[in-house]
Length: 599
Image (cartoon, rainbow, N blue to C red; front, side, top):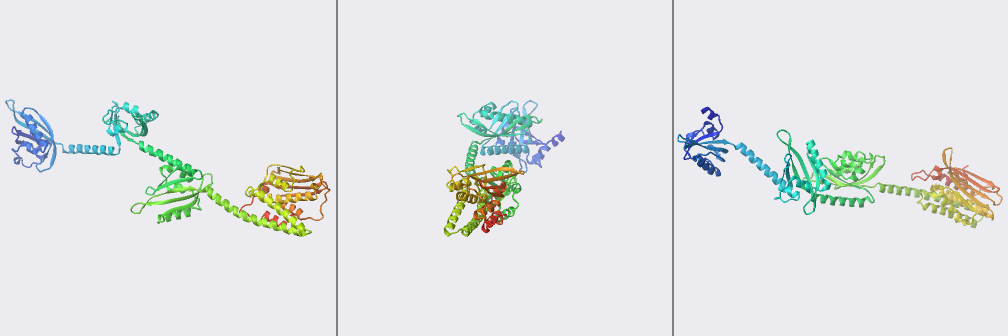
C-alpha cells in the first residue's frame, strides 16, 4: 500500500474531525513540495486554501462530519509558495461504530488544465470582442439537428434583436428571393466539396428595408472526420455596397464626360509588391487583360508593347521621378494587336512614406492619338501650303510671261492675263471647298462653263461619272478648260449660232489598269485648220495634261477634238507633304514657263 501511495501524484491526506492535518502520502508531499511532514502536522487543513477555497474546504469538512462526500476546486500554495489549482474530494472515514471518526482528502493538481481552460476562455473572449468590434457576427449550425446558434451581432446583421430566438428557417426566410437560390447553391457546394464559401446577398428586414450581408462558412468535422457543424461569420455590408454604387456612378459619369472626346486610364503602382492596379481603360490602352489589371500586374506586362523608339525617353523620365523630380510626364506610343499605335500622355506622382521611401506611384494616362494625328495633319498642311504657294506663284509667273510675250498690245496682254488669272483663281476656289484634298471633275467643268456664261445656252453638253481629281490635276484642268472655252467662244464652235461642245469623261479598264478618259469635241462651228504656230493656249493644253497621261489634239474641219487617257492613280494622286519638288508638277510649271510641249 505504501508503494502505491508513493507512486500516485494525488495528494492523499487524513484529517481529524477538528480539521487538523494528521497524515500526507509520500506522493502528496512530492506534489505539495513538502520536505518534512512534521512541520505541518496538526495544522488546520482549511488554512491551506485561499479566498473562496477556504470557505469551500470548511464546507467540505462539514459534509464529511455529517457522513457525506463533497468535492470542490480551489487554489492553494505548495509548501514552497508556488500557487496551484486543485480538484479536491473529501469523504468521511467511518469508525467501528459506523460514525465518522476521521476524514479522507484526495487533491489532484489541475493547474495545467486550469491554465489551458483560462487561456481558452481568454481567447474566446478576445475573439468575441474582436468580432463585435468589427461588427462580425459568429454562427454555428448543427448539421444533424439543424439547430442554429448565432451571436448577438450575427442576429443584428440579419435584422433580429439580440434577445430574440433565431432559427435556421428564420434565416432562410429573410434572404431576398432573388438571392436565395444562389446562397443555397453555395451551401450545397461546400457540403459536397468541403471547400468553404464566401457570398454576398440581400436580406429583407421586418420593416421592409433591404440590407446586404457578407457571409462566410466552412465545415467542422467530428473526431471521425465527418462533417458535424458548419460555422462562420457574417458582416453587414449595406453601407459598403452603397458606397460602391456611388463610386461606380461617379466613375461612370467621369468616363462619360471624358470618353466623349478621349480615353483616360488610371493606374496605381504598389512599389512594395511591384504590382500595378489599373482600370479597364488603362488596360485597353496598354493591351493588358482587364482582369489582370484589376488584380494587379507587374510593370513588364504594361510596357511590353511600348514602341521601342519611345522606351529610352520613358525610362529616363521614370528615373528622374525616383531621383526626386516632383511629377512624371511623358508621351509615348503603345503598339496595338492590329499593328497600329496609340499615343499616350501619362502624368503621375510618386508617393513616399514618413521615412522618404517610395511606396506608391499613381497617375492617369490620356490617349492623345487624335491630337497627334491633328498635329501631323497640321504639319503636313503647312508643308503642302508652302509647296502649293510656291507652285502657284510659278504658274502665275509663267502665265504672265506668256500673256505678255504673245500679246499684240498692252491692252490685249492685260485682258489675257486677267482672264487666265481669273481661271486660276476659280480653280483654286473649287479646291478650297474641300481643303485642297481634291475636287470633283463635275465641279471643275461646271465652274468653267458658268464663268463663261454658257450654263443656260444649251450648247455645252456635259456627261461624266463621279471622279475626284487630285489638287494639281484639278488646277490644271481648270486652266485647260478655260483656254478651250475661250478659244471655242472666240474662234471655234461657240463663235457662231449653230456650234456646240460635248465634254465627256469616264473610268474604264485598259490592260487591267483603271484609266481615266476625257474628251472635248467641238462640232458645227467654223471650219478648223491647224495653226501654223502654237500659241500659249496650245502649249498650256498639251504640257499641262500630258504630265498626267497621253494627250491627243486633233484639228478636224468639224471642230477641235481633244482626248486624254491617264491612269487613275495619276489623276487621283495627291501631293505628299514630303514630296520632292522635282516631280511632275514642277515639270509642268517649267514646261509652261518655257513654252515647250512635252513631246
